[in-house]
Image 1 (spheres, rainbow, N blue to C red):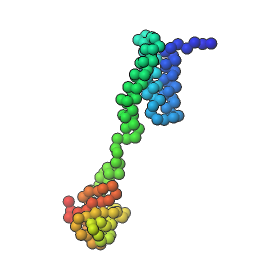
Image 2: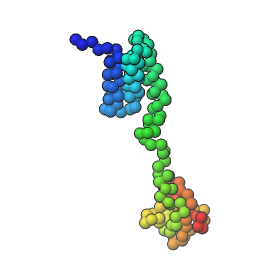
Image 3: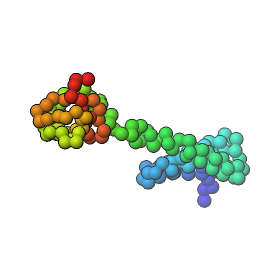
Image 4: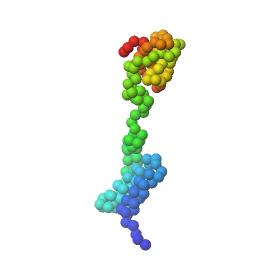
Length: 150
């Protein structure tokens, strides 16, 4: 039977944990894999020798990397922008765009046409069918209008 050295165990355990993250993603096993790789490396170069110290280093490094790096990794994987719809509307150039009123505005709410699509809209001024207005703001998928060009 081949005996595995302590540093080799930690290195193989770390690689196994990192690979397990590919099959069962959750951004947890990878951080413990980092801890195992750090312990394996420190054991290989002779900084850490006893098993209790190895376990302590493993726990400390794993938990530290988990709490410090997890939020950053989520940001990398998911993206930093929370409300993409709001940014997409601004980036599409809707603010300042000219719209045609499709329905009379009742209590400040009506429908307009912008780029061939019908939109819900709000305006403080009374607007009638066929009037022209301009987009000054948006709330989700509702356009906020002004009867005068901004």
